[in-house]
Amino acid sequence: MNSNSISTYDAHTLPLWRRPITLLAIMIFGMHMAFATWMALLNNFVHERANFDGSDLGWLQSIREIPGFFAVAVIVVLWVMREQILAIVSLVMLGSAVAVTAWFPTFSGLLLTTFISSLGFHYYETVKQSLELQWIPKDKAPQILGWLLAIGSAGSLIAYGGVAITWWVLGWDYNTLYMISGSITILIAVFCFFAYPRFHGPTVQNKTFLLRKRYWLFYVLQFMAGARRQIFIVFAAFMMVERFGFEVHEVTVLFLINYIANMIFGPIIGRIVFRFGERNALIFEYFGLIVIFAAYGGVYLFGWSVFIAATLYVLDHLFFGLSIAQKTYFQKIADPADISSTAAVAFTINHIGAVALPALLGYVWLFSPASVFAVAALIAAISLGLSFCIPRHPMVGNETIFSSFRE
Image 1 (cartoon, rainbow, N blue to C red):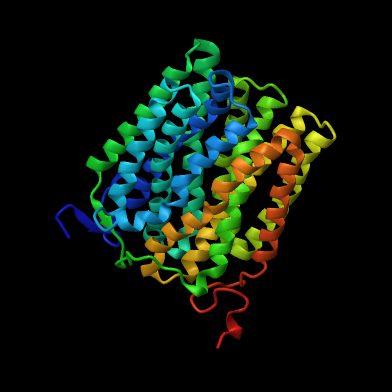
Image 2 (cartoon, rainbow, N blue to C red):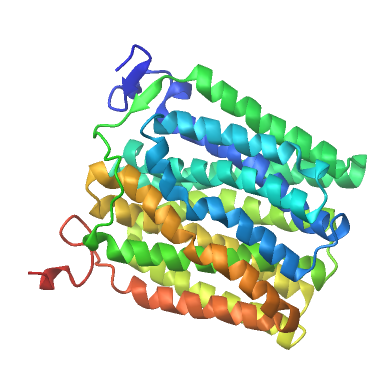
C-alpha cells in the first residue's frame, strides 16, 4: 500500500472528519444534492419544455436505468481503479451532467444527459453499497446505515429547499438551478479526492464475476425491489403533476416533507432493523407497500383527494427506508471477499425490471394509471412472501430457512 493508504482498522487514529464513515457521509450528501435537484425539477421540466407525456417519461426513465443494468461492468473498472476513486469519479460525472441538463430541452438531448448522469449515479451507488458493507462493522451496520440515510435526506432537503425558495421567491430558472446544484456536487467530489487518504478494508476483494447459489434469496429480493421502486420513482411524482397540476414549488414542498421525515426517522429505522431483525423489518416494509400501492390505485379509481395522494407519497418513502435491512442481511450471510463483486452483480439484477418496466408501463399509464400501481402492489406481495424465507438469525451457512435441508 502507498503512503496515502490506511486500513479501516487504523482509521480511528485519524481526526473524526477524515475517517471512512465521514467520507461516506460527505459523498452521500453530495450525490443527493445533484440527484434531488434533478428529480425535483424533472417532471415539470419535461412537461413544460420538452412536452413529454407518460410514454416519453417512461422511455426516459428506462434509458436512465440502462447503466444500472450494466453495473456489473464495475468489476472490470475495479481492475484499474479502486472503489473509493471510482465513487469520486462517478460523482463528478453525475454533477457535470446535471449541471447542463437545461441546455438540452429535447427528447434526444434529455436522453443523452440523463444517460451520463445515470452512469455516474449508478456506478457511485454500486461502489457505495460495497464500501458501506466493507467499512462498517456488522454489529453497528443497521444504526450507521440509518444515520447515513438521514444524512442523504439532509442533502436532498437542502436541495429541495433551495429549489423551492429560489424558484418561488427569487424566480431562478431551470438552467441556474441545475448549474448550481451540479457544480456543488463536483466541488464536493474534488474535496473528497484531496482531503482523504485511500482506505482499504480488512479483506482483499474478489474482482471476478460471481453468482453464488447460497445468495439466491438476496438476488431475488434485489430484483423485486428494483422493479417495485422504479414504478414509484417514475409514476408517483408524475401523478401529482398530471392529475393534480402540481407546479415546481409544490412538487418540491412535497419532496421537502419526504426528506424531513427521513431525516427524523432514518436513525429510528436503523434501530428497528437492529432490534427486530432483517426478516421482521422486511415483512413490515412489504406489507405496508402493498397497502400504499393499492391506495395509489384508489386515487384514480375513486377520485381521492390530493391530501391522500400526498400522504401516500410520504409514507412510501418512509417504508422504502426499511430496505437497509436487505444490505445488512447480505452483510451477515456473505463471504467478506465477495462483497465488492456481489454488490455489482446485485445492482445489475436490481435493474433488470427497472429497464423494461417504465417504458412498458408508460403505455399502460396512457389508458389505466391504476393498473400501473396494481402491478407494483403485486410485486410487493411477492416480496412479502420471499421475506418469510429469511431466517431469524441469518449468517454464513444459514442464509435462508431452507439452509438446514441442504446436503
